[in-house]
Amino acid sequence: MRRDVGRYVNDELRDRYFAACEAVYAMGAPARCETDVETSFGTTHVYRYGPTDPAGESRTPIVLIHGAGYCSAMWYPNTPALSAERPVYALDTPGDAGRSVQREPMWQPERAAQWMDEALDALGLDRVHLVGSSYGGWLVINQAHLRPGRLASVTALDPGGLEKVGLRFFAWVFVSLFATFAPKALRPRLASWLEQPVIAVPELRKWVHAGARAFRIRRPAPLPLTDAELGSIRTPFYLVMGKRSLLVHPRRQLERVPRLIPGARAEIIAATGHGPQIDHPDVVNARMLGFMADVDAQADA
Image 1 (tube, rainbow, N blue to C red):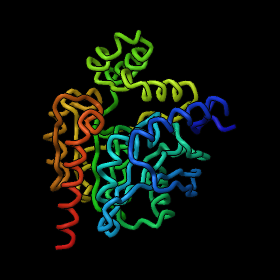
Image 2 (tube, rainbow, N blue to C red; image 1 turned 90 degrees about the horizontal axis):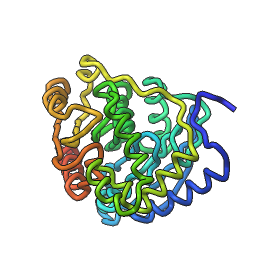
Image 3 (tube, helix red, strand yellow; image 1 turned 120 degrees about the vertical axis):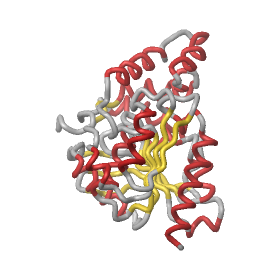
């Protein structure tokens, strides 16, 4: 067994994790179908949603890329609104806890971009609005830098790839996981203090526990893109950050990203940290859809 690819500890823990995933998926929109596509790096599992509006079938689809250690279930607050208006595809990233199967390492920027391009090609998608959160944010920014040909736009939600991942973020992740074991009466207060809904929502708490036990990630944290690399991006770009983010310094990036990427939008969402699309889904969903509609209107014009 390869030591440089993500893997499940054993089949029993994997199956328990999948059962916990299904409870989280049930909190979002029902998937229209699921499929597997082959790439040079393994099998990618894909969930297809909507659109519920028949006119949406002709609109440019949305592709969702989740954060590290998770799977496409994390998009449960977003799939109902997004798939109401457009086709939505959620990809389980190989190397993370999901239904994809990794066979080759793909943490290097060129390999990550090749994986995504191959997956989109296998799905028959030649133009997409790409959305990524956290580590998925790095993946979509990296795609805009290295292989932008299929991209109508990129939306990065409190993403990696803008700054080196600091100790404060890893400390928050560790404390948040520890807090999920706190007595039930304390969990709502800890969830509010840490801005971690997984602590207080039973389905999320069980999901996170099961994933931590079942899966082992085997990759380093991504390096941030340089100013020159960000400056090479010409894809319409939307950056959304939580005001109390511990992954990026929001005010720094609010100035930096639009200065480096021509025409980029950047926004800070108040009363949230690392998960603006989870803590404020109605706001973020509406703004993402508005951004995509503007991009499509400009392309049509």
